[in-house]
Image (cartoon, rainbow, N blue to C red):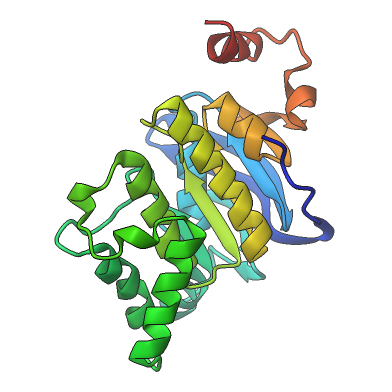
Length: 257
């Protein structure tokens, strides 16, 4: 799969993180990290399980409070923001959860309508229908519109979860382990969808993963989280061009099993 060459505006950081620290009791998860996400960029945050990758995007979306440092998202300081401002900001951020987070009692249509009706109450029924049909077409699942989540495969549920975030036309996408639990062919399809979303919707994305194939196929830039800090950043090849014993076994496990 060849990734499209999407324009990235490195003069415009839509997320800017400085000196971010987060601990849970005596467990220091993030130890003073700095990171920028640029307009139009797919940035992969790579690391082993338990290294704080998901904690990072929960802080970015306001689901967790930081201990120290600064996180600016679309010009807003996450640590100094009212509840109303945070709600308005979250509409501009699409969060694709690892488990897809669909409502089991709702059809696909109702799952997609829910965030739209809740956040944009002035839309007509026709506008809602058009929005639902458009995002379903974007993820290639128009035929599932009247199905229940229980009738979908894992890959289909992941796609519908992404569609539900896209229906609000977010400026930023946050993907939490988008290929977790999926077979290799479906993983490739989800990676392709992430790239299609970047290109079609002009999103800026952070992709949290420990899947090196996902990182290689979707990332314009890779940031590797080790020991609570970003130790290596760059292209995939630049990050793994090292004899660092913390990095090399990670590569070998993914590609030389």
